[in-house]
Image (spheres, helix red, strand yellow):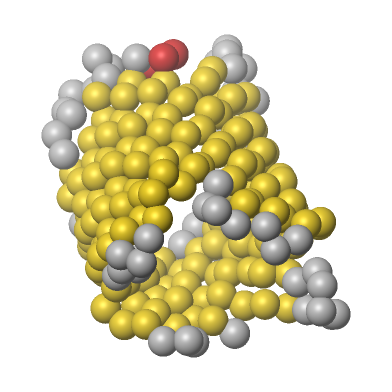
Length: 207
């Protein structure tokens, strides 16, 4: 499966501080997303921000709406707490964190983890948890790889993913990246648990 993703980043500022950072995403299947981050308080070492986002399908119907708080540290550590409302499903409350394990001029290694409380509005479906984590590696901010795993005990389901990223072009205003990987889900309720390939391009434009 091949997908093309176009991502534009923008900054809106009524004064020197705070600044509203946002992004828009358009996929090859015409689904899209809008995301925003507004700093609330902090300094050059620590920052607490309000975050939010909207996801739409190819027909511009709302698929998910997210809002929450995020804390970021200049050393590459961070925490977030977000609630995502999904029409015709319910809500997902997610606590996530990431920690930079190693960083120099050539290499960057970051670990991440999350726990999600799924709260369906569907009758007869109980609340359930999903937990997961992963590891991200980047070489000279140009070549990278990610490994991830998530577990949903209610469905006895485990999801695995492995992806790679290559920066094809970068300047002060934009960048173009190629990404490819494999993912699979394992559960006794699924007929197949084979690895599924994916690939795509991501274009970023900074304003």
